[in-house]
Image (cartoon, rainbow, N blue to C red; front, side, top):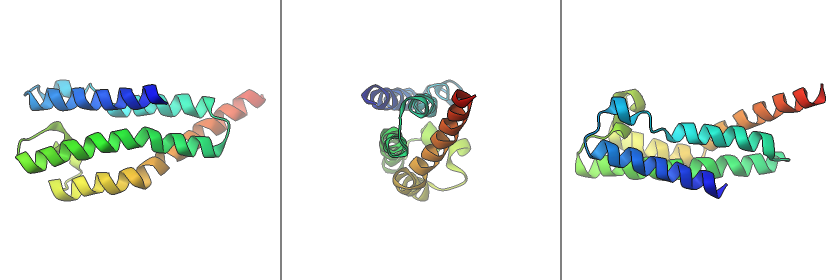
Length: 132
């Protein structure tokens, strides 16, 4: 888990540094925290034994993502400097305030629950395959 947490944080920092340094969003978008979270989701779906372990893993995968998102959006909000974190394709039409607050609240509630649900679905499929 530590490796995934560190990888998510590092990817977020790389993404932030690239966007602040003026790298085009068309390049920055390939440095994806979501891809790392997804890899963790797949890994922990296959390696955890209990629903409780998957639930805990889901929160631990989303928490560093939320920290980076809220920090980067706060930077954008305070500095007024545009970053990829507030790009139209990611903000769902929300201004910076609601978007930042949404990531904070979502990162503690529905986002990890969504990851947990996906982990449970994948675990169930793997369980069925193993039973065949």
